[in-house]
Length: 596
Image (cartoon, rainbow, N blue to C red; front, top):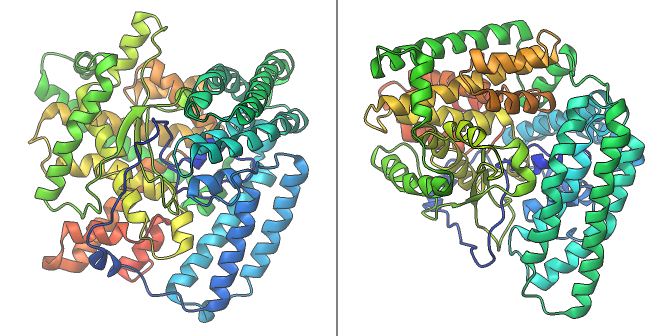
């Protein structure tokens, strides 16, 4: 989802692309015009008023992007396209010192000196810096996760080829410059990695075989029209070096790191609590959060069973779900199936006045890039908020590997039954992530354009899955409702497994079983989801954000009474950017009432 909370220099760079990532042929760039700018601008918060604050924010982000050039490229800031992150321990330690200095500098700004929006932005930056320090000093993924390094090598190049923000020759020069620095990534990995969890090393070993073809095929194909022989020779040398480095790193992972990968992936209860506080501004005790999660799980399970009984009273819910799983397109028609539903969803939003759609340009549906396949089912890849030229957006879908056994392909495709296709299209595109991106372009400050909370963007998209059916989309089709509930149960399972695995209440194997038995997922997807949870501990943010948003809507409707408008509520929410929902709640309600 990129438009994500800024990553730390050594956090998984896969998180750069907050809505995912994908490649497409050159020449597909489309302009995304913002409709009705006057109406949208009217939603913007009070203007920025303190010149010293504005200067500090500008200086901070210049410093940050110099140290995080891959993220800068994604954002659409291209001053650092030829530079690569420093993955060394010394760089991590420098970041720690810098972030502590930035926190001290932020302390010099009092609330009285700032406008309401500036004061909120200061609060966001303090949380962001504390999150960076928590990751670097306590969670220490830079010492534990070997995939961070391999994914960093792939994604720094991906950001240069995924969009035609500059002529191919210019971007190829940037690719060469970054590729020449990639060996330092793997040198840092060998120096930094200390007793990682076995599952982290196994994931890295699984992902690298998909990264190698990316460099062998996708990267050269992106520059096939460049005819400069000198430049091509330089590229072939740097690209072959990267491929060799990836292969050597894979061998090292298998022969050296894996046998000594005996660390614990769990971050622990206190780190979990602080991560939620800094990332999402949620400070509820973990036992209370679990109570809330289990209550929503049981509610959705009961509704799932009731809907399944209406569809087929002679079969169990599991049997009804299995039957629905057989109702899916063949793999080769999956992308077209998604294309076929987007228009109708968009028309429904307009007819029912669900919200304002800022642009009529749809996202392009594409297959997920090979090097991202292991950890994503579907995703939305949007351009960064400052990208002025290559403004295309991609809705990526992960197809099954054609080399899989037929039974594995069938089980995987059961997760793409037609009900889930609708639910996924709503989540990723309309009115989910794609609409969020269009609104985020008009966020009221630079801080709001760059920083975000996962409980906001994933909570909104998950909220939309249910909201659209509640508003009448599908005309009461029970199969669609069952697909929506299956997705809700998946997110419920993430919520509970994430908390319980990372606080020592649930083993990895128990997590897999929970996804199967309580989340109604196939064993293949259950394994994928549990693996994701080991390195994405707070992936409760889907359900957490949805529940916070639903409560905000109820409270806002009570405040407005007969003047309540669903479209006005959604537009007001989206116009605030992607900060923690508690900040938007305070803005819309005028109080600090509980988020849950």
